[in-house]
Image (cartoon, rainbow, N blue to C red; front, side):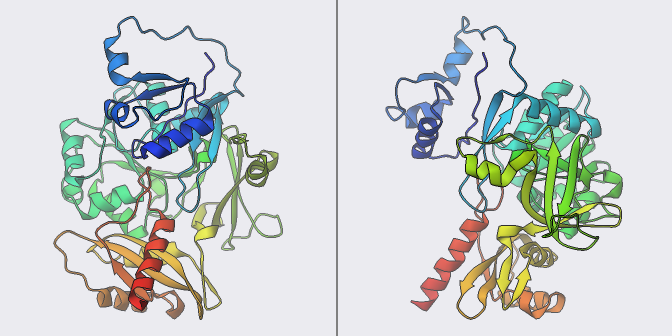
Length: 427
């Protein structure tokens, strides 16, 4: 009927759900059984409310006939992940979805007999792209609603004879360091997709070694690009370790310097993209749209370098750079060194305001179950591997890092935790 869908994470609070429904002007909502109870009496009216039991039990409930819709019409409103700031609503058109889905299928050899274990929510653009591509290919999806126990993921892969798996860095941190995934071969697994952030080189090697029979596709994307922007072929994952590859079919990627020209190899610039998968803009935000997607070119905000062959290497997000003692530090470089310690499951490096340094480097890390890791061991390892100005001032051992609804580490919340700890220590 030409309506627009807005998927919402199940982790949202009732107040957040109501706020999004009101802001978007939703005409109908589909709720799970538990949400019906928690949202009772809170949703605005008039609003048509469906729940999963109504849909499952009402045999007379049928979908309306399909109608012709312009490819440029909005199909989906996606909230950005908000890992570094407040999320915005991205307009995704039918043409965006079609273009990105076909492009991904051009390099991912999905077949009707594929069985993808899905741990990513469909409210996240990466999860949505798994849905679109597997539906388009006629393949099966096995839904895993939570990731609380990493070992249960390995068991499910084996019992369901899964051929594919996809995750963000935090997904593979847990699988590789807190489960039997490294030592237990999943014989049916033939494809692994990694996106949603930079996986440290040491974990890329561990991932390849863990399941050598599976092809590893390292990818890069943004919500504003519907899903994917680039990929690195499995044959080049180890020879070009740390790269996100080159543009997917139909996408033109470039790394642009301050002068507006493509950068020379080894020089840092911003990744920009053009293609039919690029969103036309943010909902009801023309100023942000012009700044981010003016002229049809997506300014990703991600800083990167290129090599002689045009392969892209993401350095960090512009807002995640730490300015300390006059130096610009990419937190991902420090995280990669910390992750070399086998007892570290996950690490997040942030800059904390400091009167003398401008910003001091601090790291929050999660250690492997049963490990006994002291902060001095971490600092000594960093001093041996990093320049002095990159060595963390403080190491925070935590039970878990704060994740957003998409499973990605929220640097904003890590930074807030570090600031709070500093305040308590000085009190």
